[in-house]
Image 1: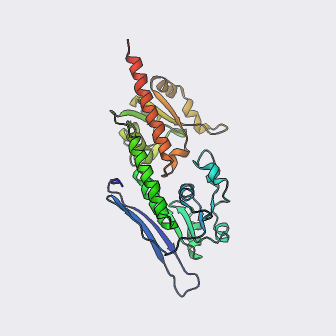
Image 2: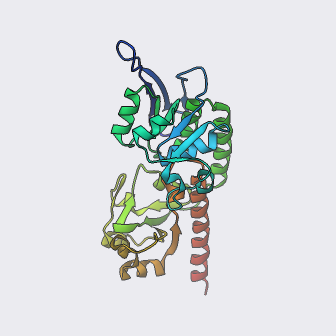
Image 3: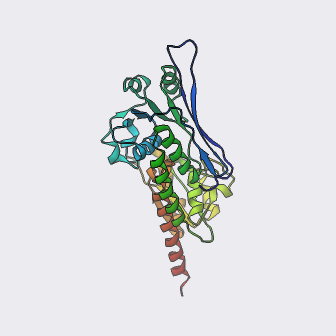
Amino acid sequence: MANPGGRFLRGCVRGSDPLGAGLRTVALCASVAGSALLPARAQADAPARVVSINLCTDQLAMMLAAPGQLVSVSALAVEPQSSSMVEEARGIPQNYGQAEQVFLLRPDLVLAGAFTARATVDLLRRLGVTVVELPPADSLDDVAAHLRLVGAAMGREAEAERLVARYEADLARLRVSAEPAPAAMYYPNGYTTGAGTLADEILRHTGFSNVAVAAGLAGGGILPLERLVMAEPEMVVTSLPYPGASRSEEILVHPALQAVRERAGSAEVTDADWICGTPHVLRAVAGMGEARRGLDAMQLSQAAP
């Protein structure tokens, strides 16, 4: 696996015995340090009943699970605006992440995100349920790390390694080697993503630089429209509008932004392919690679006499 830039990614499983004298805690941790992810199994046997209560763990679990092993995914898994695996999820019962609902499913393992409702995670652990929390993906390398972490927790290490090998080969094939062209990612309310994010790394992998990084933004935040215009991006990336209408999306049709988009290349992307650190992010990478080649073609035609 490629070196993830020295980050240390940690996910843990903790369980407790509600009947014993004192708490019995076991931990399954996977870490990325340098170029290796070192999983440790919390139990000898693979969990027979797995429940996911997070959109990103939903998709990883669906990719890795043995037949019948995954008994429930979150309701977000069937939302087309958010999920890349809607059809697969429709055949699995959905949950709303409530501790009572999840506990009644009799899970051997619950998969959650690091920002999943703390009350739910804490109560499930107090009830003796083993919970794995998955950190957010901040880089393309984290996709392989997350596959290995969830694969280890589910007892599906071999399946995870097969997916990792395919993902890393496809990722290398999709790299665009070109002089970086400045790109602006611009979403409702003027939201964008800067340094240290999965979206920024997708841009850099496909021959772009991120104007939000040049503006000093780390993580997610608001980029004033004036800053975007002054940056003179060669590509503007926006999200497809949601059904209905909202004031937050009005900035995406502002005349100043439209003028920038008329001069630059433009791409509309689906949130589902950018949100989670799963192999489906390759669709976002492929799409931006196409946008980069389209930009080159447009600029070449404009330069022609």
